Length: 139
Image 1 (cartoon, helix red, strand yellow):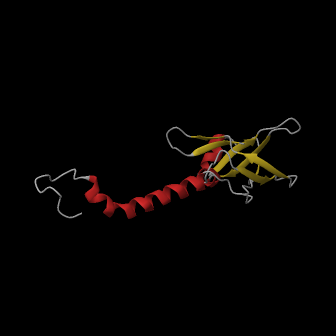
Image 2 (cartoon, one colour):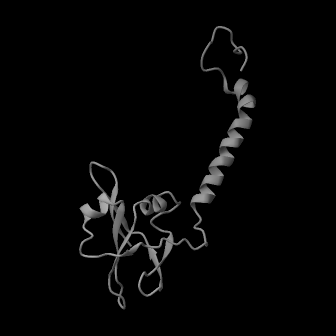
Image 3 (cartoon, helix red, strand yellow):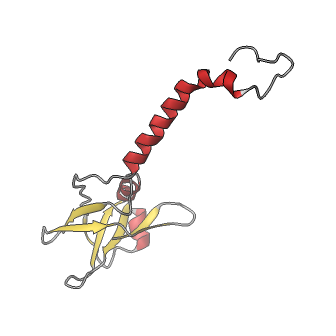
């Protein structure tokens, strides 16, 4: 930034002396903030599928699923539908959380038995308190 305007003052120089050198960097930073704002405020229209491995069985306990890298989950029922208990791969939780707006974005899944397409929104992902790995997901 060159020598200070006042040679006796070594820190906190006047703004007018430094602003012309910082303007390009400030403009780049402002552009990045605008892009970040636009990217975070939009939800993509592309369908994202998170297909389950299979229906959940009585033997699929939380302990069993964690040992086999599976993720137990439920699609909560609505007025005309019952709850659907399913099992996903463990990486499904990270796939959901790494997206923009993970708990607002709609996801689609194919029911393993009826092949029906279901539109869901993730409500909650529960993590083990010490291992920090997901063990339950709720749609």
